[in-house]
Structure formats: structure tokens, C-alpha cells
Image (cartoon, rainbow, N blue to C red; front, top):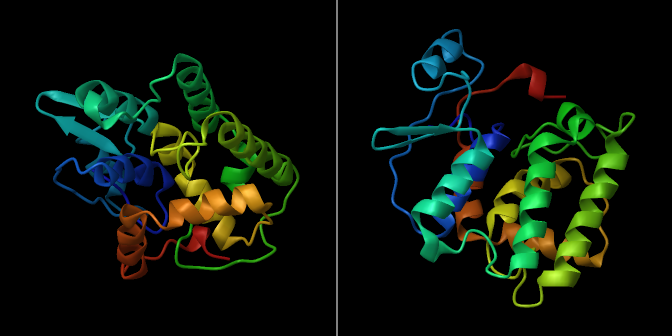
Length: 211
């Protein structure tokens, strides 16, 4: 279960991972910002948030927990890097993305179909931006030589940082050559193109996420 594709960064992470590696699933969308949104979400998740993965009798919520569950259920998808050192770094940066970057989240909210160049640069935001750029450069330099993504092929960190790529597009954040190439590689993913096409045609608007 996911929220609006235009705004729900947490939903994108789990959805993108499933779609990118070709795992079949039924998509159920719960529009956010509606009078009954919380009530509907609470029927499926004790946290009252999306996304939620229903896998038989198992319910998993929170994006990173869903992604780790998928890594266990589908080992052939190689959601975590095979190399131990790479896997440790992948887990660390994924957890950092999950738990941190509050200024970025608060002032550069995800809005796929809009463009707000120069907006959102409140105190702390550009420090978050630079830390993310540093993470991308470090992962690419240490473990990305086998492909275009953070650890070469698609892994959980790419799912975790995909919404940030969209934020950087929306707010026209400056990127060096390495970070620009990585962002472009994420945007070229077929699953990302599918998500953005759907977001463009959604009928819902949430005023607090629009400048």
C-alpha cells in the first residue's frame, strides 16, 4: 500500500525496489491529505503510515524494514551488495537516510511534478545536501565501478536515495559530475519513469507541499 506518487517519498522506496527487479505485487493506493486518510491507513498499519507491505500473514511497514524483508524473501534480487565491506557501507548509508536529514525533508519536500528552483534553502538544508553528495561520491568511488548506481547494480541504497534525486530535480540543486551522473542513472530507471508518469496524472494536490 502506497500514498500519492507525487508526494510520498517513503512509498517510492519500496515500490521502486519491487518494480525495478520485477517482483509481482498488487498496488493499493491510499491518497494522502484526505479526511479519512489516517483512518484508512490505521486499518493496515499500526503506525498509521504508508507504505505497508502485506506478505501473506506478515505485515511490514517503514520503507527500510520493507526493503530488508524483500532482501530476505528474494535473495536472488541481490538487494544488498554481496561484498561484506560494501554491504556494511550500504546498510550504514541506508540507515542514515532513513533516520536523518530532517531539514531537507522539512524544506525540500518531494513534489515530482513541480519545479521550485532556489526554494527550500533554509538553515541546515544545504549541509544535508552536501552530506548526501559526499555519500554518493564515496559509494561510487569505493564500490560503484561495476555499473552506474551507488554500488554498481541496483541495491537498497538506490531505493533509499531515489526520492532525494527527485527533490534535487525539483529544487534545482547543484551537482558535481559524479553526483549528476548518478542522479541521471536513477532517473533513467524504467521503474522510475513509470512512477513519474503516474505522478504527473494524479488528481490530488496537497497544498502544504506546494509553494
